[in-house]
Image (cartoon, rainbow over all chains, first blue to last red; front, side, top):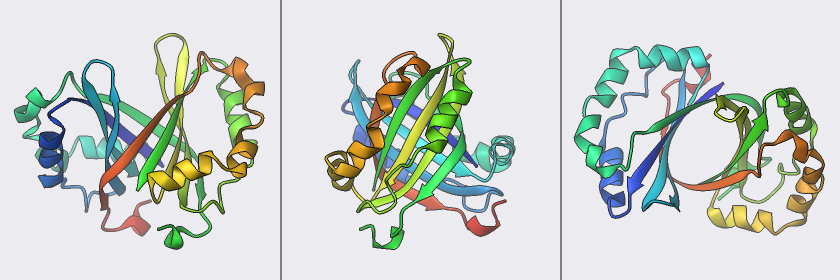
Length: 112
Length: 112
């Protein structure tokens, strides 16, 4: 399995706008081959007047993720990204991770 | 839900040793209240002669994670951490994330 993470430096004061943009979009991911889950994550404040956010998606393989980046679904999901450049202190930073080990809790259903 | 991520800068040449240490340990996580899943992740090479790795755990809430950090299970899981300091270019960097949105694939079982 493979995790694709994009890290965003959102200017303090722009957090609500950032969340509105992301929570309101259509990710076009649901039926993409090899796509497992996506999460939008709010991280800590960082130096330089920004808050870290991350988009985080799990794939069956690195190849499935890379095929998606070349697809029409990817183009549709990113076509408006330039409109919101003012929310960010810089460009997003991509990190790809290979999953070496997974441990599941004994009671995932009861974990509430 | 809450994601706790620890980022490790592993010296190039020490990757196999790092993976052996991590894959061979007992995480003591399985029965911890609120624990959902753990993943060990291998990331990209970075500047400074290091490779990024991350440990990545999903919790039912930030409170469940924080309760674990004060527990005996946490102490047991970390008691040998100092022995392997030579593998790293610096201390681990912790980042905690609140999960704002989750999207699941239409065919998670078929995602192979």
